[in-house]
Image (cartoon, rainbow, N blue to C red):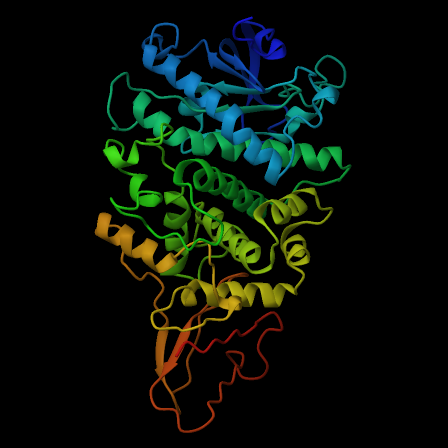
Length: 451
């Protein structure tokens, strides 16, 4: 009688030695830090360990706030996050019997990340899915041989939402938690399916952003797929409006809040929209060394699901389990050519909820989100950081115009133009290379009539 806890999780050792891969090193599977950790949560399909090198004031054993936050994270994982991953991507523990056979995902919170990997909130490595051969072949020596992910810790023992406090850490870490769990599910699926590769980085990161979005929509915002959700307001708090309002009463009716959810999706997409010729959904470009492509890739996949998918779950599961990669995988799941997919997405970035556009084609819409309303809301809340309309095409009038020179476009980048005015005849648009003649065979043109 009474409350019964998961036997497997409860039987995990109280203390454990764990290796943390040196992800900034030359060989991440054979370069690592070694530390000991103490179990701070063990329920259901999750065990959380806290690095023993954690500053004493922030250890769960002596800090009730941290102990409470570990419990909340673990409970939310079991109740909400793990089902989102399993139903939309695949089972994190699908290969558990072939790895550590302990029935749980292990999460390690460690200052190794804070101290050595600037800008990293969490990570996983595929090396962990294969045995540690130290003492024999001395390969894969950073492996903990199991389903494991690693995350950063707070650094300041205080309250409030200044940087690196426990409150601030809890507010943002759960998006990282489900993001990294999705990576584990993907690695597991590819290994279990016998694929000789993992998904390409740009698509893998974009799909991990979908895990964050799904958790937000289903458990924080409570909004529907294709619900055209906007920024939100005090009267409609089920969206981004609450992401940065950690103490607002109308936002806290959901006990999982305060929670930072999809703001960084639109922050990264904003970066693309302000200069779409130099950025791409297909990874970093030479002039864009950041991670905005995570969000741009997310938007491309979101467009594909909304336009061609039967459901989030059906489309995302098929993507994760497929024996192809990258844009080939994405286009195959959509059932159209990559050219049609990319052209529709590029147009949707400007045409979604375009003012005055009646009965828009499904080819140029992203019906799950109202992009224009969201960017207007971000501008209203953070006017120094965002403008209301970030994607501004080069404006041209119908008729003759002087030849235009377009800077080189990186793969996946877009150059936008609008034609307006009085149209008295057909408009001819001719593309040539810089020196004349035919342009690159990889160049495509997508056109939509918006008025």
